[in-house]
Image 1 (cartoon, helix red, strand yellow):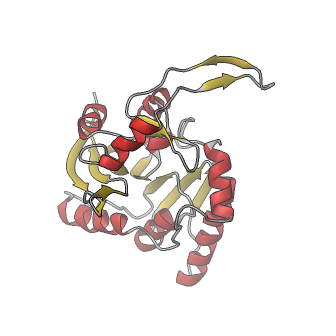
Image 2: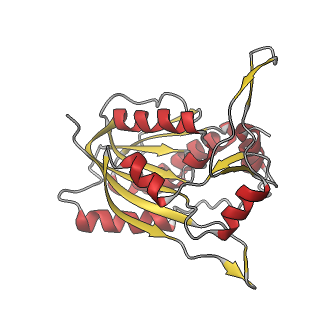
Image 3: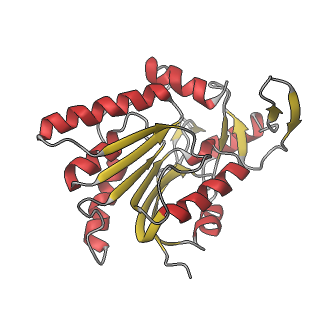
Length: 256
């Protein structure tokens, strides 16, 4: 199943995940930390928030409402984007101020729909792991392009370190590469299997599991990494049952 098909079905009729309409606790924790530790206010009035894999919009709608910021959100699921639009409209009516937010249906592997050095805050909560290596590389390059120097980046993803459940998924359901088709559906090539990646046995989509070393190697040339917060190792009855995550607080470097 393609990621787009899966997420359209999931947002229309949730079966595998619990999709909350409240902003994430990880975002609130980051919000408080950034306000306490930033040299200047990290969520400036009329500044721009970019919500990567926005889903139903719950996180960027929260930031734009609380801090009077502007927002751009995108998701691969058109169903999710429609929900995000409605959420922004509802929140605007609730607070008596229309939110200045724009929504797009696209993948994080495509060119980001904002100008160079225009973004003050990026939030990516559990999106990047759906991207293959070449797509991740393009995505990082696009983040570097669109973010202002000293802009903040909240990044959350799956992490392999200490996660026996993820290691089992990789061992039992390894990625076998991707078949590439042309516009007429004819096979024209394929990609190699990727390390630390698997095809999810229940939902049938590709997922990558980052290592802590990989995160630092990938992001440290462009971002100052202030904090990494790993979830607990999820063991039940002596067996791994849930994947481990990590939240990373980063600040964009001024690149010469």
